[in-house]
Length: 566
Image (cartoon, rainbow, N blue to C red; front, side, top):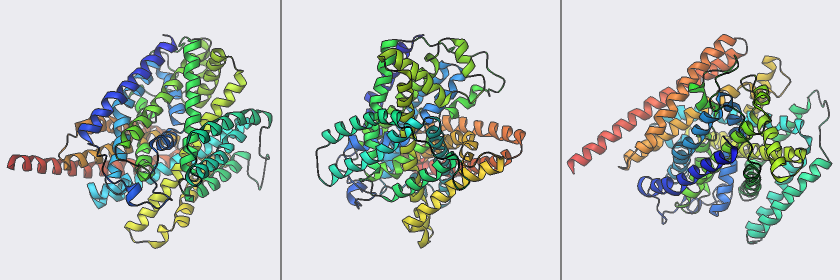
């Protein structure tokens, strides 16, 4: 199998999904109304609620939901062979992720931009809302801690990526001021900003930045984590037009150019895929493909975090309800395209199958490393730039993806805490500064505390909980689809297009969670801490599933009775 054929087939299927299936969902199921007044207009405050050009908002949504997970997950999952990963990414993007992301934006917009957790209280029950929001909080804490650690590690491994990554913040603020305060048309700020972001990659190579070996007893990784969370805390409090929107937008443009470069190199170089379609010679450490494939590749096929972004920040900025298809479904399609090229880089960027097997000698290997190394080989061979520059470029791509996710994640965690304050009448938690402080503190506690308990260097604890991230993410996606299904039944609309993917992904996630429980129990030690987190999440998810399933059946019976009476 050659990589160009795989890319062509995969991208064609993703396009067909957007062109036809998303149109059907928009017109027949969600029934978008161009005249509906969205919360961005009805509740406008120019801080969180702001009507936004759909292209800019797509850039925010795409980069916020993508992160490094659609690179890491597929880069690990190809250990089972390229075919299972390819099929799950394509089918998941078309029939799972697109409907989920699109639906989360639509459901939130129709309910005053409430987060999917708060929305559960209206659609299902107050008890389900409480349990659901705990699952959400756990996931956000994991996301923020994991990506904080991932960025810190990337800065240490590739010091040449530091200046380009931080320059994106300066460029974003300038674009925000130009567009929203000086009312400059969007074209030239976009062109100039993108050129600057690529130009500073050369500056980064010339001036690599490394932190001191020790400061106040903290290693460089821990120092970076503190800096990153200080930044994320400040960024979460700034108006969306000043940093969040323009940063996500310009990063999205830069990352689209990067994806274009990768796919262009694949078409030109047309490397052979050296990995087997189905790997029959797995290392002893590899778990069974089923059900672990469906949680190893979470982002890139379907992800509960997308529902949090869609109902947390995106819905507050949607100009017209009809934009939800472009922003939600096409945003998940962009992530599917990223996951597809990650599969290609991790399977076709090696000289031989023997070299590939050396990379995948243990389960968990590959990931970002395979993407950067394999992708750099393909880009170098395809377009002729040096392998070192290509590696820096791909590292910057991954860091920017992770950084925008972290920006949105801390802001979403603040929203959840403030919603708790409003729901349970706790004024102090409704304060933005207090809520941000609580969000940052819990993430730092996880990133530093788990590492200390396991005897790791300070700040590496975020990666300890990585095995739980995929499972929790997919459980949350299933719960979100179930809440959307209850809404559809209440409105008298077909729910099978959300219920079928809900049943499939929830079943796979629960099976994976049970497998992980046994593995964590066998590992013992600090893994008992992870085991109890896993147990709590599974119990919370099951109770929400039972509550929501009961509400679904109740509403369906009511709809059938009303139809019979009519």
